[in-house]
Length: 127
Image 1 (cartoon, rainbow, N blue to C red):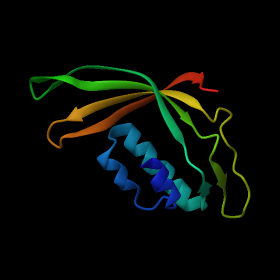
Image 2: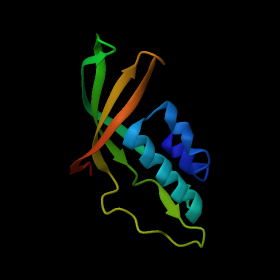
Image 3: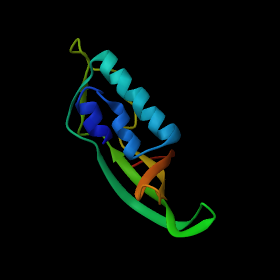
Image 4: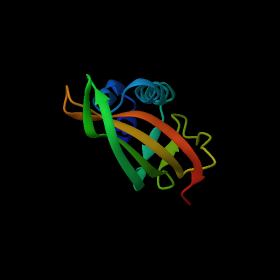
């Protein structure tokens, strides 16, 4: 969804609400507003590859939910994506264009959906 929001010029970033909450959601909205403000244009996509994962119990509304909490270690490779500003120049890009992250995802029984709760850099590159 993040790729789509950015590809559509950062318009209506609140669409991320169906997929993320808290700080993760807030960061996507903030980044999308910057994309819109600076007129960034993107070509190509970001490839996210899950390298490992584990699931555990989630305590919700006093009831334990087996496998309701998941952590995924994934590579977020943006080496195939180009970014151009409204004036045609290339903005500064991160030194590591393929960072590894740990995503904390939980199941919300009320909406029957999985939501990204946390996204933490693992500190190592995938390339």
